[in-house]
Image 1: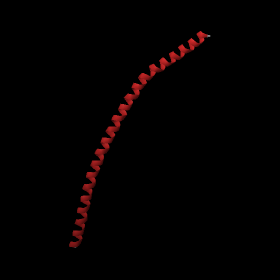
Image 2: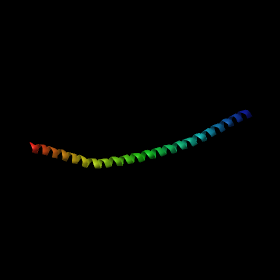
Image 3: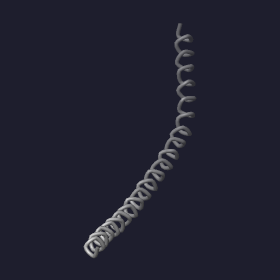
Image 4: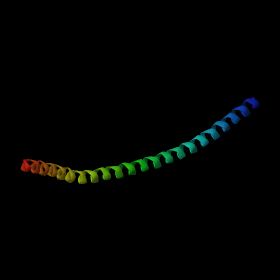
Length: 80
């Protein structure tokens, strides 16, 4: 009977130790995932602001190109 109690207490101590180690590892992994998601969020925000800046610059450039094309067409028609 005593041998069975000793064996069970050894297994209990082993599983308790394994549970503590796994809990610590899960906490570390969770913290690392949080850092990665924060970095990804910052990157997405910076890309979004970059895209809006490009859009702001792109629209006037598109209008200027259209005006230049019309001016070139007018010049060609005027020469004929």
